[in-house]
Length: 482
Image 1 (cartoon, one colour):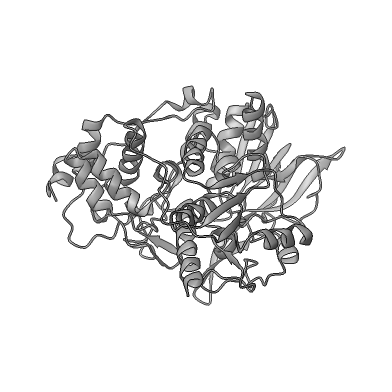
Image 2 (image 1 turned 30 degrees about the horizontal axis):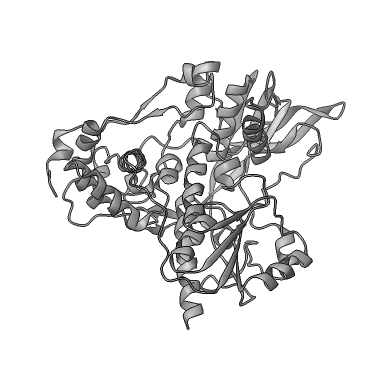
């Protein structure tokens, strides 16, 4: 490594962000990349740690350790430090086909597993990654992937999210003829409609799709494989099928008042807004002037806060079932696990700026949606406390703690419970106990159908989906060869 003292000599410096009060006026990306010299200094902070955990790609106690893609992080950091930006891009491209996505939306488990993070600030790995790929595009280094010797085997991929794109890219590179079928009007899956523009501008997706098309992959939109007849046609026209359909069945909250107008899934809210922006150039008015209440605490809930803030919501409240996280790691969450600590993400920063208070309310259990004339107008919720039972912490409802909270738009952002039931019926496949498509080495109960991404493993990060897509393609290749 070029500068073993960098982590001592230089302080961590994040990318600049457009101030919250200004960025909420539009849906543009608000992160501003550093110039090359500054990023080279940041890369110099990567120490010669001997045993790097940043690229481990493991899970422990359901927490990530390092980069799931096993990116060669110390190597590309060293290349940046030395000003070898093209070399850095080559190193990054070995493991990550889409760093422009992960560099924007990944929560960076690599940084929590950085050796520097034990007792100081981690290296800006995610920022370094984004700087590498955006410089590569600027310098015209990113090219369509060349195929190995083509074969006559045709593969259909259902879905066009990150797992599908990664799987298609790898299969195409291995010589297969690949066609992607997407039921929506635009490509990208959750990248397109599940992540708002200010986090991932849609031109970034289109830029990558164009390269994949140039490499020989065929894309078809508005192709919903939603009947047994359509599945049979797909089986007739193609030698193999890969299902990359995601964990697209949202968790519901089946309580009194659920059918009231104004209670909707968070993903539907985000999709409606992004589609409106793309189709008309104007955002949706679903949240304008309303008291918005969001149930859930993940990234999707943060995105809902951000969109509702921009849309001109009257107020925003977010319910979490868990208590407020600690400011520092607990003994149950040691390094190098992904840190489970209190943070304030971009959408929450914006809501605090606009409304003057943090929208998060902790340890709340939603009991009932209260309506008037068929529309939701309030939510009843009780308080929770944590107690130990058989050595485990459980949430217990506090008696007589129910309160009413104003809400005329309620967004359910509690995650997903697996694959849609129609997939099981139409493709005649087995599901596992978690309602994911059952697969052994990526092969489903039908030996001509493979599966990867969230459809196989349940709701996960974009970076895990990309990894799964690559591994699925390689598993298919080995199966077909043998």
